[in-house]
Length: 220
Image (cartoon, rainbow, N blue to C red; front, side, top):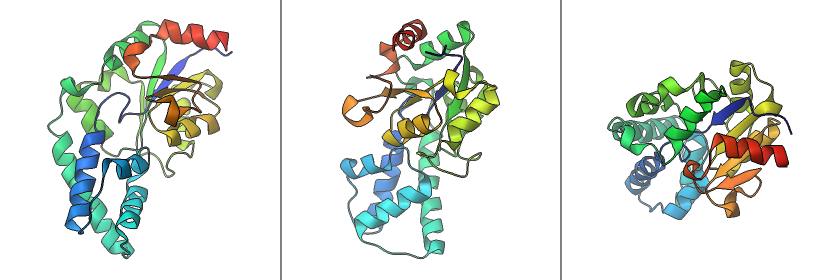
């Protein structure tokens, strides 16, 4: 198989744990609209854009609104989320993530972020992760949400690396599908039950090293 020359990382659930802040903000919004939003409901929002997430939430609540009101609610949710992430620090980097990023740089592997989040820079700056990236493609650079491959193709382009030499790290099925559509291999971070389409699945980056990854992909 092709040598790994670049690693592209999703942010939420792969490098940092911001998923809980998204959930709290969505749950607060649902409660303000008069219905409950469970953690199981929240699973449907993984890897999905803000606008699409709001549509799912409204569908769960059986509520229909016009586009102007939807835009207002999406902004309300985002404001609450931004309040939460403004307090983040390096303690919220997920186990093994920083070591893996450092190993990528030590081995000359290029690193990009490929996230739907429009708040990615705030999170990266607050956690001190920004210097580890050669390129950052977030929700302010993309027009299509995963499973569209746009975010990863833009990342490969920014790194000047062919998709066949890129590996995507994702915790959502939509992201794994986006990687596949981009012509890239993928590592699912989480459960094989939901990420079975990934080339490799591990519980977290703590269970993986760059050298072990190179070895695995050389053998498949």
